[in-house]
Length: 189
Image (cartoon, rainbow, N blue to C red; front, side, top):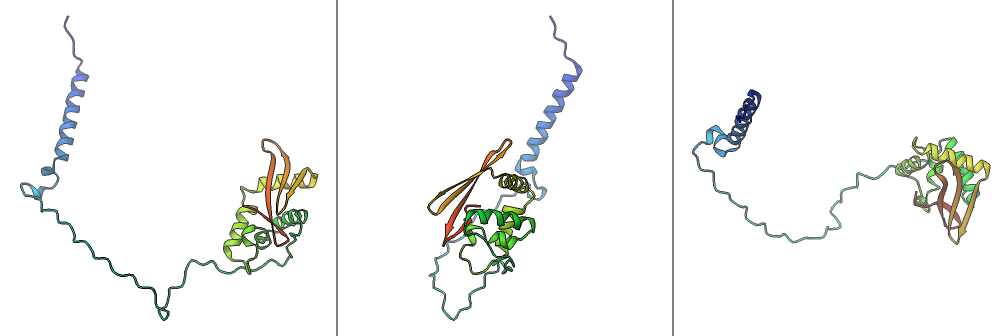
């Protein structure tokens, strides 16, 4: 029996061999740069180690650079924050969402408790937690559960949890709170 070689296999084998030879020629150091043909590469020199310099503390008269990444101050809300109890806090939060009051919402976050003034970063955090488009469906369900009174408040000392029956695939939603200086704040959001 005689094997018959198809012409396409022969052409493919020749093309593959040519490709391998071309790649080998391109990767050889002598063919990488035409001006270096036959020359010896220069020896590799290592830099001398740098002697450690003594560290001196800043002198009091030296001007220290001002931190350029500080968030600018923000205005407070004209509405009084009602967070003496959890019911007032949630009711006020739902109303502040309706009027897009970022400063009021920022004052309900645990991170702003005791701060003398708000900064723009606080307003951005409130926007992310309460007003972002992706947070709107969650707050819509919270508002519905709040109006239907399908919630339970579990309070243990200075911590509390609001368990809301929101239905759907989510089922229930739990929101944590912390009491700081006789006022309630959203914890961890």
